[in-house]
Length: 162
Image (tube, rainbow, N blue to C red):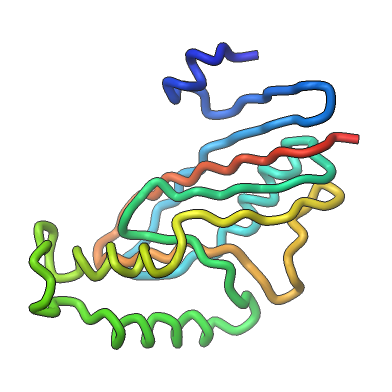
């Protein structure tokens, strides 16, 4: 089992902490994103949940960035995500002169606003060692920048193993 010093320093990719009733499992995912897109990561999260051995509990997913977000969204019709992008583009247009933070381009501040208005974390129920999502739900990374990025996501699963 890894030491708490290594965990706190962020050197461990996976670790377990167990007490009499609760187990914790954590894994880091890296996802390469194309320009301004959504990517379904439900399967990768399901794999982490299955590897955790946790039967009943919660799965916390966190993205380590300020210009991308996590959403739970319909997974059947991609038009839903297209419509969300259209809505956000009208709500927060790139290059709007009201923004003074443009260090990385016209999409810089709009990407930050988008991530604040959406989520950088989601918590999902775990039941029978699987995510307990609705039939039409999936977990997506929403890239808000116009250039490709590699995104870091931490998945933490905690709960009971029996």
